[in-house]
Amino acid sequence: MWRSTGRWGRCSSSSGRRACAGTCRCPSPHWNRRRCGVAESPDGSTPMRGVPRGPLMSPGFWLHHAALEWRNTLERNLRPLGLTPTQFNLLASAGWLSRQGELPTQQQVADMSGSDRMMASKVIRGLEERGLLIRRPDPADARVLRVELDPAGRELVSKAVQIAVDTDAQLFGADGDMLREHLKPIAAHRLPQ
Image (cartoon, rainbow, N blue to C red; front, side, top):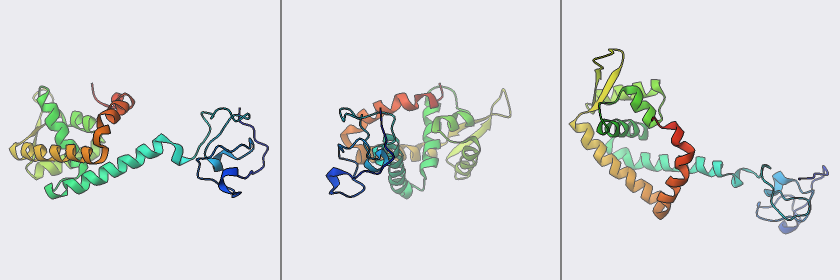
């Protein structure tokens, strides 16, 4: 278990400075774990879990920044088509869901893309005004809107999907498949069944 004497120690591997780069294995059990980045048991034998290690040691920190980089790169790559990542996700989700059976509802498209209902409604309305998709009331319930890509939307989605595939290859390289398999169990519950 972590012991703290309440004193700030000095990192022996950082030439006596008060902080290290988080890569050392400080022999001093009273070294403040937040400054060092690695916490060890008092005997120094094993790193401890559950102890704050700093943001650079957090997989969530790197996942967040990798997602930001992916989105920025995708946005840059989609710009020549006049699409944002949000517009692309909604169009691609509508296309994917429509190939699975009946035309999807606007809510199903929002859920598949991970978008908020209000924001999805606004963006889909804009895509409809651009002539990329059509919204029709459901015959069984007029409050429900069904979404269908029109020919221009299908053509644009086809080009945009290739850009997204190329963006994934550019950023993730050969590790893309492995990364996908690691992320699927974490996020699968968010997808509609």
